[in-house]
Image (cartoon, rainbow, N blue to C red; front, side, top):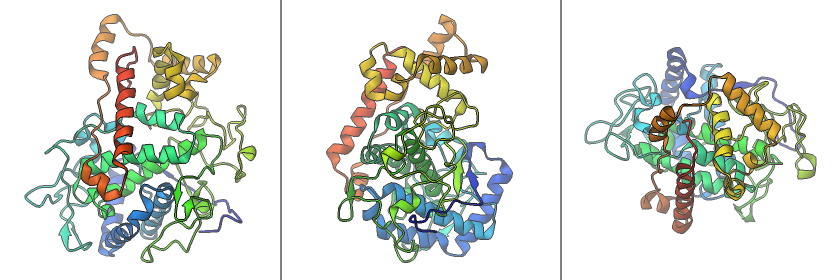
Length: 427
């Protein structure tokens, strides 16, 4: 990895894809790689390292840059075994209503709930694994509700964070206290500990968290917004990314991982903005969005796919549904104050831009419904309340319980507003 004082553009880029889009052969390739990483002791190494730095990278600004670099290091280890190996991301909002039924938790993929008195995972790519950290044990999962899980966070809630949070510290807190924690707790077992990297789920989950951060970076007016609690007061881009010597980053500064496509961060996401063609400036005056330049990395409203008419205002990886979400939210709220509070970028859409989105929906076969169809859809599309963080999880991270509760109540209030409006969730 190269210092950000002389940012170097990646010459060999790879694309992290949605786990939902992978074929059986893709999963077989992942299986072969993680088996070899396991036999090399890499899962023990990364689990131990994560536990060592745990207090420095949760509840603090380093949460995003640390996990971006940490998952990248693991991915690079896998690419030494198979140069085509790439960690997929698990967009857990796609499965938020009934996580346990997800296709990602099946025998050919991550496997399901733990079995027997010890909760050992007996299927999937880590079936019957024995791990060495923190002591010898089987790889465990223990779903949060028996053989089921309570709902996670919906795409609409995450979309609101992407649009409404103007500072990284606010976005980091919202993500940590919502989709991040809910998913770890839902799976339970090793995933709900400080040594969560024992479960390959960890890397897929944090690839998705990274995707959301990258989208937020692109949606705001700078890629270099970095603030909140740091190692010595207010965080700065020159802070070293926290590291443990077993997974060392060479004292790399935070600024070295802020832009995908540079300084060794050589990947992109299939449903998120592409890396910029040239390294952006690090001040807001240098990165003001150009509404007419689709290649401008600082453009606040841009498509994730070439020629996409749907702006990146949604956290969902379901490209076909993003336009429905945006247009339905805009139509559901006549009170502009609600839009401005929760979905300010939807509120700011020019009528012509909104018309483009709605036209794209119609071309995709997403036209109007009859009253009977609408009534049936409404009954099945009410957004579920997400499960709250457990007291044990909050204590383990050293979070402020009142802030965690406030974030959960805020999400529930948004869900109430959506459910009590004419909005029909497409998810």
